[in-house]
Length: 142
Image (cartoon, rainbow, N blue to C red; front, side):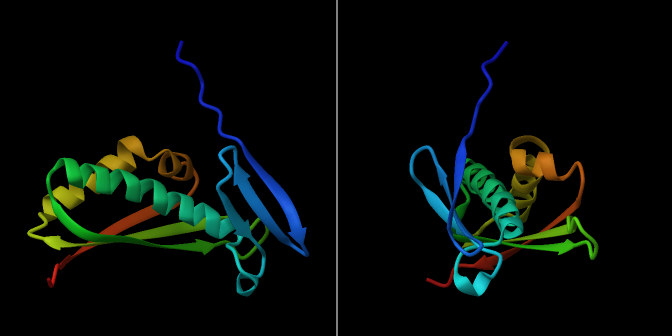
């Protein structure tokens, strides 16, 4: 049986409702209930985790497919329930790929592989929330 991977994060109170979440290597993000105070809300960190996870997969796959990607952005929006607990009821991902002669089929398949095979955040969230993806290819202008 394969060894289980354990991820550890510590969350420390800084002030009011502001916390710093730090992993074992010392990388940190700030979390706060009031985004204007700096940091992401805990629910925004869930969206960021999903976008980051799928973005890492998709760009890796596109590079293996030798697609000439010069910029890549994932926009994510989550709709939340009105009543507590205010869980996400729908999440929309929009992949914006900039590059030269990027093949739409390569992008579509890369996103599909991320969602169906590689992205563990997507696998976990999709058990309880509808997740929709779309993409746009923007020609590089240089």
